[in-house]
Image 1 (cartoon, rainbow, N blue to C red):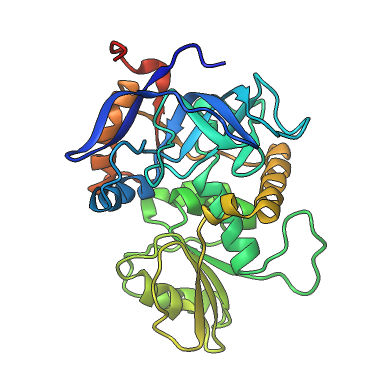
Image 2 (tube, rainbow, N blue to C red):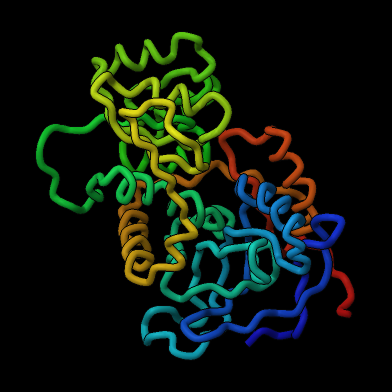
Length: 335
């Protein structure tokens, strides 16, 4: 059981994110209470703060990704699905609901959006086992309909363009699938398994990608989905057209290229689909072949979240995961 009735958290107020005290949540049917050891930041975190302010979602705790230990099982959690004391990492729908990961405790679905942490991964590394890897799998296997690593494959090998290969989602897409980052990250993405790497700032990048793929590229993942990328990614698709998995909504500039939005939160709403992806990620991690994003520990624990959100909003985060250790958070009196 949670040792106290209150916890330290970062939540929405009329003036923006506030560091303070909130009640410890209780797990409902099919849910678990996790004592958070580390929480990781995603671009959606700073973006959702603005949306939450417009919607007056005051009191909602910010944050999606977390890692920690199972503290309590709620009612109707099937036997063997989760155990008290188990190390787990995953994500919740922070900011849009009262429950978020930038807190000492978080309530999560027992069987969706959460996986056991590999023994070789620290809590700080496992805090990113949420939005990024689940989105990566969804892009590849649901949107692009590629087989999972454990399914039989037939026909010739496919070439997939990964735009933004050094982004958090991009790093997982590369590893899960097996092409795009700035020159400073070439070594990183090649080390993760990319066969060819292109500089997205290169004015002739589209011509180079088309040449490298013999103008036959028909599938891509746009992990940026903003600015120039709609024209660039769809422009790289060959003359026969194709499909692009996107993580932010936009319309395709080409009628012969279909774009489809991939949203990890949907996996928390579908029991069967959500469980399939949990099982898949668990198997993938068990191979021991997946590397976490480089971790950047922010000072001050949860006190550092407001600055981290601003830092990311200013576009200063590249090829790393901003992560917060809950134990580094200074204590404040209970209300």
